[in-house]
Length: 339
Image (cartoon, rainbow, N blue to C red; front, top):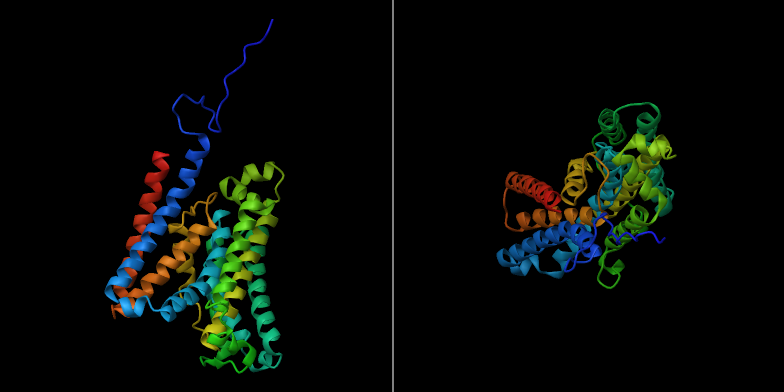
């Protein structure tokens, strides 16, 4: 006697009915709604900039400046996105950028040239990330407290190294990267580095076991542990990744400003967190996208540029940023409730 054959089901477990759209379209729609919303906001900002200051805003040099400024905080945001997806937070990224930038621009470090500055910036970032990771993963400290302590310590050490003075870079190889002669097809080298970090971050998050483990730890750490994931080691790696991104960003900032200052990276932690949030990353962990975070960075950088060109006060700019964050979160919640 033949057994009855159960009807095929889609990825959601439901039996498709005649006239229903394919399941892949629903999944694609849910994934793209946030991205298209952010692209819409960015397009609206570009339109506003083009209307208010068409000659200045749409000038090639200004657009290159916007992308260059977005590159530094953008690299930091990529690392922050991974940390938040895992259910953590890193309040020390701005201070780590400051410490790495001043340590890499001391007279002693500059004697080793281009390689010495780059190596020092990355090494300092990794060192700070290692301390954060050990305290959180193996010391049992709450990420908020551990990274807050790192924020205070790194800022203090940066101030001690510089004694409050600006350290000027004299290495030609570093300074040359900020010149227009170094542009590749009209694209600044800093933007190319940002693009490379973004692509690598996307591949790691979406195409590797490391990315899947990061999402699993953020979604349910205990379930991830029972599934065989070393949660503590994964968290250590994530804070190392965040520190690495801070080191790279510090080097980009050195190239951009031609100096190292203890005030570098001021409020980078808030900008990175805000960009990740409006990009669709949940503060509770378990979900996030690199593309969304990058679009968030571009939105905030464009806002800053438009306000600067129109000579508007910075307090109005902060209010606008806050309004965008609230609107983005409301859109995400509404999208989640309707899909």
